[in-house]
Length: 240
Picture 1 (cartoon, rainbow, N blue to C red):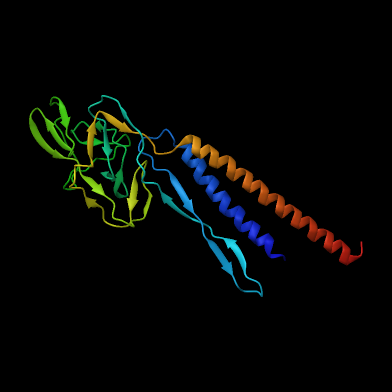
Picture 2: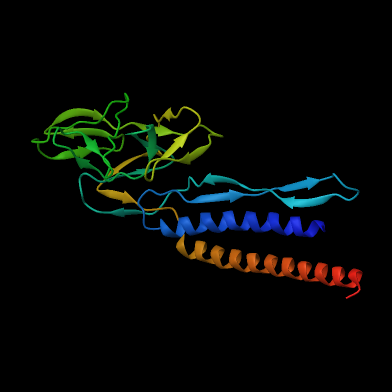
């Protein structure tokens, strides 16, 4: 069989995967703290025959760490992170990290995200306040003050360079390397009464979606033309 059929099929598989990631990004454009998913592809060179043939790899996914837009809510239980740091949460599958700082308080005073996962303090324990206490103030370093009492601080973490981030529970991420506690609050910190939106650019993603769809159609046309030429060749050989 002609190699261009296999090349076309590899291109279609790669384009289909990219279409899936773009569609997922568009669907989560309104999800707070969501990190857009991106893909990288590389050439796969086959030298099994007399002529080298270039195929498209299946691609590798990675999450964008670019910050999203921060909007004001004036809700004291909403926090957003400025800079390259993450909040820590305890999920059913283990610790994870998130930029979604929308919180709610359980009856026992533990602060959780909207999915019920507790936020962790700098020591790795759930953040707990007095459910009957007064006004809550959270400063740039994540320190929590209620009724004039210091009740600890949110854990802020930085991902090591080269760490591979994968999608976790909800809008959280999981890292393959141990996250590093953030201690530099000059460029990084927490702002109370704000929420970070998704870092998805809907207009850009819709443009990608259109371009990818056209590319997929173009490859499909080439495959149909190749199949047609093969059928014509078989008819000629058969003498029909």
